[in-house]
Image 1 (cartoon, helix red, strand yellow):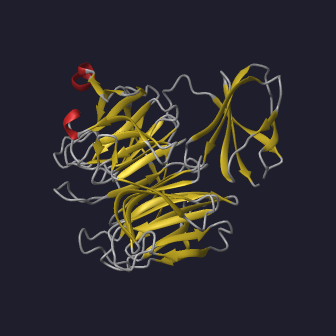
Image 2 (spheres, one colour):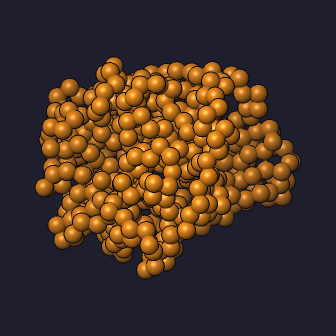
Length: 462
């Protein structure tokens, strides 16, 4: 079922200093010194997520107490505008997780006897929010969740509810966003048995599963009654293995960037374009030689891999060459010395339209960062806006560009969390009409020519 190849030159001779490493710029910071740390790691804060809605940018950060909504539209002045207390609140909580879909935020916790799945209506932000679902029958605790927005499917890893026994992976239909319906419960895929799915990335029903001590799997969930393993790796099948924690897929679905949450282990760059064969093309790290350097969470956006790297803070790699990333930006969120523990940068969210990057630090709270331009990129294109009419739209709209040129172009649509939803090769002189059959939500509309990139947000309302 599997083949894995490692390029030795990438392991031993890959030079991370091929370009100048820059420091991200601190625009603003939010923290609340009254929030208690957890009993386990003394972390007051955990996961971070982001929302672009109604012309505002909102950071979501979890704490031991609950879910904080921080207005970061003015990045120099982050301000809490709403708060939702968790079903369990206090030092028992280490971990919360978030994803949004179709105007609702889904919030879970991994500890606490009274924790719940909370579904929060975010459509009226920044003015108001409403908790429309708060129950623990389906989900009381889950470690991570991920929403495949192309199919309105919610995946939960290491999950259990008061009416549900423990499951390594439990799946729900959220096509009715406030009435989740369980549709799958999995502990194996063919001959690949799993005790947990710690985290996962899913798009168009193809899931990339980080299975903790069990390794890694790529699974086709198109037939939820009989999902098919496309490739599997045990921890014995790849070098520098440990606790297989998390990862993210490149926009073109050719490379997966996988992290083992084990001190001293590198992020693996994996070519997944020819499954079941998987080729490790490089190992990348934070540029630290400390034995307690350790990656946590990753997100890919356009040509960059953003990693929250515990003690090392925010680490950003340039993945223009997807097989051979180079270290591009860093920002240290913590002054705690490396040690055999889990402290520092927990989560990262780089998908806001402004380009600002959100980072949550376990002890220090929310950081809002910007990235100075890469001046040594000779191929950088001119970026302009494009006018979309009507906007909001039902999926049918036209686009108008200033100084439009008649040349080949690629039209793409991305979800607000960076996943490619639509792609079309065209010539701009042919037609400026677009007809998209996509779910409601906020999207990024992109037109790329040889010389110019045009971008604009569009809201789809059915």
